[in-house]
Length: 207
Image 1: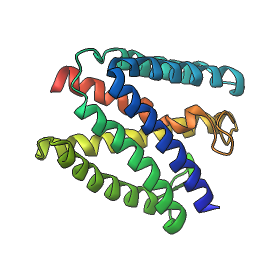
Image 2: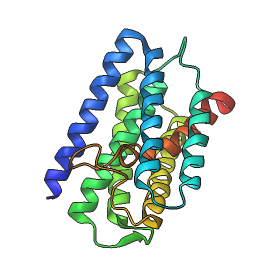
Image 3: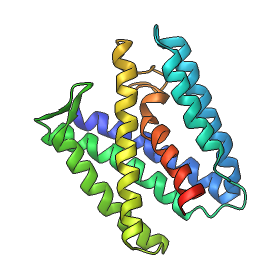
Image 4: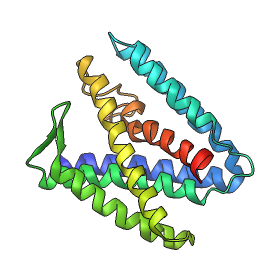
């Protein structure tokens, strides 16, 4: 079951990357519309599947969307955004895999399936791979880059926990079944939704 779920997660991630690369090759500014569609699907999921306390998750999604809108996708240097997407996907993938294989100690009660082993394994592997990816993209590797990647990973993890909390108070295992055998759109983009806030702040105010 571990490897079946890992395979499904990997397939979805691979398809998303393929779509991302195709759009980037054609015109990167079109990626805005893909993300807009994802936000719309998540709000639709909340309206349909969340039976109570819908206001807070909807506000959370809208706040995330506002920060996303602050990113200028026209005339955009997308190397750093590529790193952002890569780091999120790697952490989501490897924290899940190491947690399922090695996980024994629960990390947080809000999300009982999260383990210390999964978090540490996902953090280390995604950090190392993100540095290698930065080298491949010829991004300057320095202390600021290390901090940037660490914060991407940590904010992605926080996004995962926030989404787990919203599901827990609604007694849901998955946000929907839009992706058969794989959960909902909110499930798959939970890390992105919070970490994009950090990314938007960093490129607009800090970099």
